[in-house]
Length: 427
Image 1 (cartoon, rainbow, N blue to C red):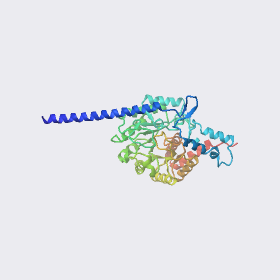
Image 2 (image 1 turned 135 degrees about the vertical axis):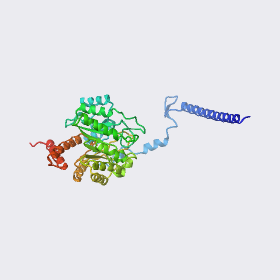
Image 3 (image 1 turned 45 degrees about the vertical axis):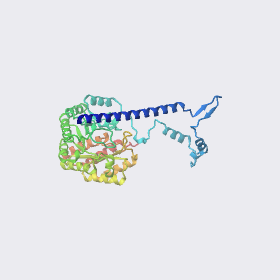
Image 4 (image 1 turned 90 degrees about the horizontal axis):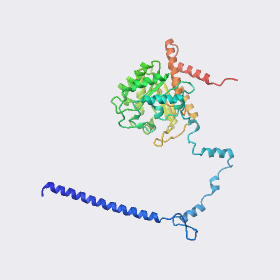
């Protein structure tokens, strides 16, 4: 017998043995299923009816459980410790709070569902041009106010370029993730510019997903998009909320010099929580370097960053982060409440009160930030903040022409004007 024939016989013998073993396993599994089915068919209810019509307890109900229930705590044990019974109003309030339709969010975090003609118009344009907004992708609570116009009367939106799929997986973000997202749309810069020109906005925020799969991490696409907007809407103020470009200066500089008005990059959280909150490719020092390098590249460019609160940080850590941002030359800082987008994301550690946010706003002003936006619903791209920044840019341009005021003076004068507008009139 040849060697090949021997090997063939051994191979088929092994397959035969494996097949027989598998058949035995399947037969055993079939017998187990049959036994289980027989047991289920014989299983009685917790309470059966005998031939005489009387009920009898089956063996499944344990007498021990009935005894424990009988000797367990009563109603008096649950209400003990209360000095006085609840008033009808207090009882009604507790009952309403426990209804299924009521969320566990504090009242200051509840917002209306975005509706209106302007919202519908913006959505329609976005779908026609295959554009994405971080407003929708990140489930922003301010979408109704921003798209609808709000109290300042100008609708704003944050356009998300380079697709809707990110190469990173931060634990707070609801944007889709993938190691290999779809290729960039070469027509996107022109489509974005055309849409924004049609909307007639005064202020626009461009942001993007992280694209670590690209050789330049998307720096060139960002730069081209800003330049396209400048061509079609030269009067528009442009803020770019960028990735970290892995901290590479040669990729940060083209975006900083592309013609934008505000360069934003988010630190997200305090240094101690970076690894827990952000993707492993992002870190505190790298983000600080990006902001610092932008300021060195173009000192007149406004820089901006954002901090989420409610993820487990301490007051001392927040204070240190704000100091570090000022040391890096950051002009604008925003602080807002982290809100869990889905149950798959990290939990909220704390709902920070509006009073605490007011405290951080005062701290920001004392540290010398040109503008500090701090509130439960404040996000890195927020309509009220955009209005304030646009006013700063306009008045700074006028002031630089007259060489009368510095940036801090301009911000102070705008804040004073806003307070006078919204102050209650004297009777």
